[in-house]
Length: 605
Image (cartoon, rainbow, N blue to C red; front, side, top):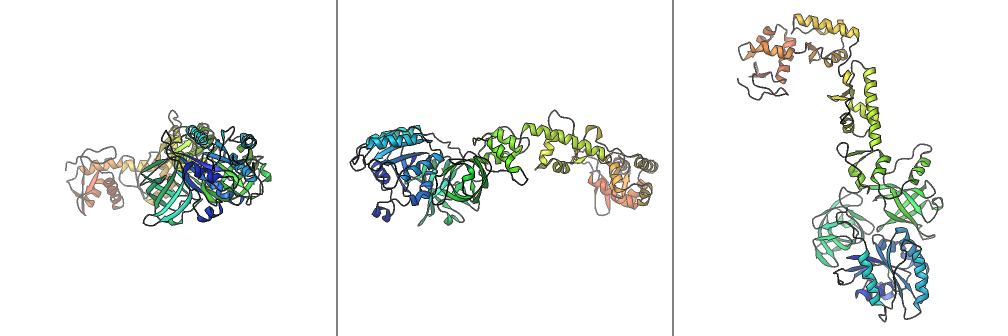
């Protein structure tokens, strides 16, 4: 299927022309048919051509009071049938409709000069072709027709078929964004919405998110040209039966989306053409798809601005839209979306700096350029912005600009070295502290920086980062002397841990003991009990010499220690898998083979 919209001044015969082409009535309301005036969007289509293709038309109103409705009709459509009457020639709404098409960047059209039975069509044809050629439409084919006599209709059908064959075919795998132009209730079926599916594929059973993110609806029925379908790919006119919470609140101007594939944004930076930005009103209407949203304009450069939307929309880099004053006091302005997640402008001079940055942006999705600007970004977020990922993530879903990543690696190495120099007893920089110092959004990025292949400047151990030559604390001389004193006492009585008063007398605090433990000079059983490194294995060896199982009292005597030390030491040995409880009073040694984590794999007792 190919989908076109009509365009042109009121009463130039758009509806009569598509009626003659399709044999269907585009004006759905009795009031429209009584007055001969299109008030709302109409939808009709031709039968299949020789290639089996249908041509669907979105018939739009031409009256100046219904320009917003016209915008809703042409917004999602890639091509247009432009209509000018031979007996009236170019008119105000002809010009406004053309300006809207130009703003939207529409590039495919056929010109129909209607009422050729009432006046010579050639002067009007020449004038209209000249005007269309000066816009995004460029040179277009044209046909003089009469819906009354049928003259020229065959030639118009030929040109429309030729146009249909030249229209680009969108990707069937694209993320669905269905702008709604109708929503109504069908007895026995519930809510039905219609729209032009510009790209992507809809299937029965699919889930679609509402544009405000408030609900996820299920597709339980699909129609295309009043035919039941199980699958429809764009471009196509579709009617979708949806079911879910708040489905009855859907209406024209809203949108249904592939879940988790779009960013809803209320702030965008754009390029504006058609007028200098400083002449834009502060408040205008933004038209995209079928949506019409009031926005506040903040000029940033000669042709760039920041728009604050009254409600978030699912926009992507490169989207084209229209800015229009309420009431149409001046021609519409074309908008190209440059950034859907722009930075805050809080500091003095930030606006000027941002304007200079925007001046270099084209509106064409460029993954490498976007990554250079953002430095770090999740791959899913970049794709949701409409920008292809330029490479593989550095960790998880995170993409990093290579130059920025290299600078971060240098900064991290410098921060680890500085920390080791300033904290010799605790040389390891905690990874969370490193994350804050580097301003990183995720601790996984710190781990990835430290684990960069080919860079051996950093070691990561137990949540801390070290230089290879400073992985052990450097104890100051007074602390080292105190630790040496404790070690000498323990060498005489290995399991008689010094009392707290003795540690205080030596000047050993919890902090300095922790440093000694990290340095491998002491083994901490609890905060109040420290022994020599290897004392756990030595204790287990002593206990194996006892009749199994043994009591706490028997273990205490064998180890020549006190209950203050024996209780936590036995619990420590239990945790290491060297001993185990038999009952509330007794333990036994475990003698099976153990894996690297100390877990016994084949106990023999």
